[in-house]
Amino acid sequence: MKYYIIAGEASGDLHASNLMKSLLKEDGNAEFRFWGGDLMAAVAGAQPVKHYRDLAFMGFLEVAMNLRTILKNIRFCKEDLKDYQPDVLILVDYPGFNLRIAEFAKQLGIKVVYYISPQLWAWKEGRVEKIRRFVDEMLVILPFEKDFYKKHQVQAHFVGHPLLDAISDLPPIDKERFKAENGLSSKEIIALLPGSREQEVIKMLRLMLSVRPYFKEYQFVIAGAPSLPKEFYLNYVDENVHFVSNKTYELLRSSKAALVTSGTATLETALLNIPEVVCYRSSRISYEIAKRVVKNLKFISLVNLIMDRKIVTELIQHELNTKNLVQELKQILDGEARGKMLADYETLREKLGGKGASDKAAEIIVKG
Image (cartoon, rainbow, N blue to C red; front, side, top):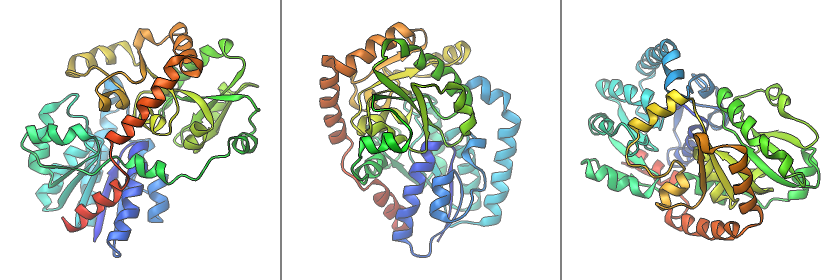
């Protein structure tokens, strides 16, 4: 079968690439055309129609400023979809764009599968109506999402979380070898995951690196995003601050703790068993708008949302400052909070179910 896949962010590139591998096992005649990134390209042996680095706009203001580009991409995607005529359209999160394409594909009579639900349970719940009308199969990866969709008369399949697949297949890590191969010192590592978009990284790195004077016995290593060039990070590097690119999992597994910008990375860090502090700050206007549209959420990190209680500390907006970062980081490096967090991570993994999400999703797509 012919599959047209749209992933608009780095996390979508990861999950879609693993889904593509499973589709190839399930369907020996699988052909792909896709929007995504380098991981998907490696599986398909071809370049994406559009790379996610040209699609990801962060926050209400940035979306408004780039609206002309976004609308141009939507028009182009519709024409490309019509020309390719796939058997199945697979949408990976990225709702503002993907739900528009879902409606168009439905008009063309193309089967529409949504893999990895938009966070409609947090905001824009009204979009569930579009899911009901335009999506044939809804495949969700968080346990509470199935009940959310059931409440809205949408049948959803809980397939498990694909991060469990990616993480369970990792070979053992040699921390000292990792340090040597990447020009790091023998000091223990505090990993910094500032995000993947340039404006986000600039803002978050300034705050994260402000704790350096209080942790001179550690070295700080930045997880470089594949969407940003090496030269970008050189502005932040010195004798005790380094960066590595495309090695985030290896970096985390070699670290004692991490400062992580809110997003999928918070869950990845937890599943890799690394104590973390979750960081988030946006522009004041974007944050005020978000507060008014996000409904009934006590937390912003996936770790806490899945567990429905505080597992990791979230420092948001004005709470994200040097004093609080230092205090929380000390707790997870050597305090009682470290042991409790690691124990809670075990419960988190149990709640997410076992491995096999990509295979389950592929089976539903091919045979469903």
